[in-house]
Amino acid sequence: MKLSFDPARSAVLSMDNQAGIVSIYVKEPEGFLGHASSVLERSRSAGMKVIHVQVGFRPKLPEVSTRNPLFSAIKNSAQHQKLFQGALGAIHPALTPRDDDIVITKHRVDAFNGTDLEMILRANDIDTLILFGIATSGVVLSTLLHAADADYRVVVIRDCCADLDPEVHACLVEKVFPRQGSVITAAEYLEALAA
Image (cartoon, rainbow, N blue to C red; front, side, top):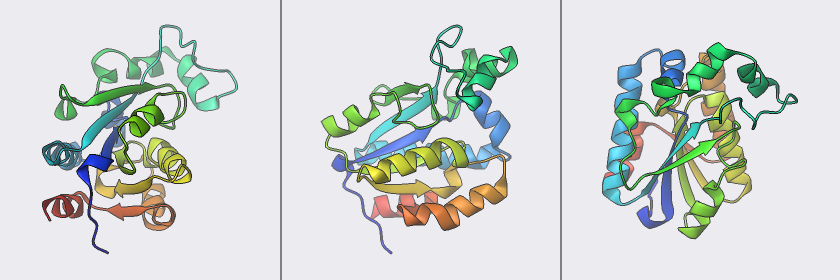
């Protein structure tokens, strides 16, 4: 299947690629960051919107409910909270947002939940989302399902995603994600942009 993109109607979402998260989840950061950086640069050159989604919280994490097991574990651990503060919580320096990029801070796994992402996409007539980030079983899965249900055309760049469990990553990109959208490599994406 040959993919093509209308840059005016497409946005790239780089999700949870924060320094601390990259250091934990990515076994080969040079390759991962090289692919992700190329995707962002070429997308910008093509005239696409680039949106960075990051996890962040206010002091004392008032956004976190005790009914949310994942995030309440962060709230109850000063060590885990450090992952979202300062240099560790910043978007990885290799993927630093540019002036025209959009940065969205989220407080849940899904990039849409509780953010203004949907408003930004609708205001800019975006109908195609190119997704990548960490973790494959977290933000990528949640955002893909939300976007597909909202009738966006969704493309996942598989080698710009990472997960602590390689088997879970493989299952998602090979069996689950293709039911909701296209799954391609960074090289295939760059080739489609060049066409």
